[in-house]
Image (cartoon, rainbow, N blue to C red; front, top):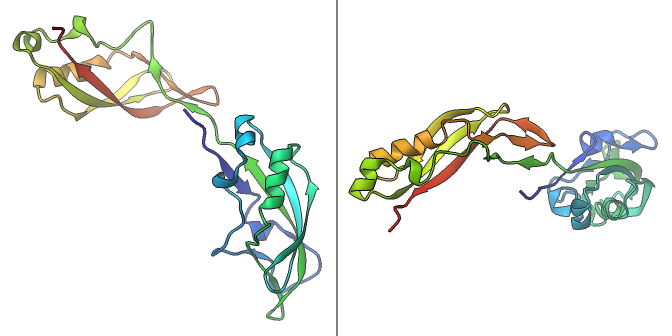
Length: 214
């Protein structure tokens, strides 16, 4: 399963800035033109290498909303992530601070956290106790009548490897085969999903095809 990425600022971005001097209104994120922070901007090489970290970026937000003098005051420890930190505000994305209702120039320091989400793996077939699918489990009456078809079964696999809430979500068109679909996964034949190496509950939909040998 491919891992998706997320990026989190430390709290609300404008709430986390350290502002030099007093101001009636702090620098804030421009909701119509946000900084380049998020999954779409996570450096691909950092994703591949599983790099994560926190940086601090110091910028001057001018009264007209432009951003200048971007510098890194705390490194993530990774060159690709540091470059993404500096690039985050290169096209602006911040609203200026105000004093007595008027926009002013203000220097702010902004923390950015780059985090990869927990890695998840879907349930797998238990090789020591596989699902009851195949010739040995083909309903004999369906075999005699030449019944074939494809079904989908929704099942919850718990962290301890138990199968629960088995439901038919797509029918083969034959009651006997549908019953075989439900029974196929009713024997705790799946290993649980994992998140960061730890077993977790997960619900998934599994297609099953019943085909007679010619």
